[in-house]
Image (tube, rainbow, N blue to C red):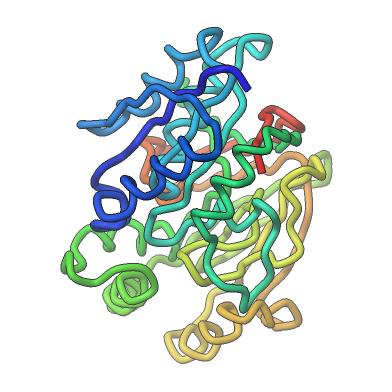
Length: 307
């Protein structure tokens, strides 16, 4: 395999990257992988590095969590398709939800193993993966590798920044959920799936997924496939705090799909309109897309992914 570029986010995983990257780097070298190293020092730097690597490297290795993957994928999607390097992921984040698709894991499976990820990168076998895109109607655009949502999940993503640093992974996410439950939005929306007629809907959360899991342990769309050319949608009615508490364990086991307050849908294009600005979460990040109209699409096979 030609030379690779490892884009390392040293602060990802609330300490996991700093602790485990030396071992991962040694494993990459032992697997015969020649790579250059670029450590990020500021938000969006991984995106700039990935875009600048187009045409210069055979593949990029995102070392970190879903936020690192999100930035690298956005950089790759800004590059011309013919010059776009492949993507490898060494999952050392808090949730590593995108890595659960490499290969696809099911609810209850252990968290992605960075050693297995290194082995997959060393094999050099790439498969096509879809990438989602969000456009806000005002010129804003953001790509997502794993999923996006508006409503409750987006507010959890915003609140997780206030969680004490010593809490990591699922503990941090549950703490952010507890904080969000004190005050969470009811979304008054109009939705359109593909070319079907638009309809009005009141929702607590609408999650649109390329992957299966978000928040580290919540299997929103357990049957999603990252190479089927479709978006999987979890559309929730307005639910009470009591219902949220009842649904959380089911979401963590992927056993929520028959709940009457939830709908599971698939589409290639979803349009969301709201009279109030929407807070958007994408791959656990909060892109500047507070718009009243969002168009979410899927680009089949946009990335070659080493797994």
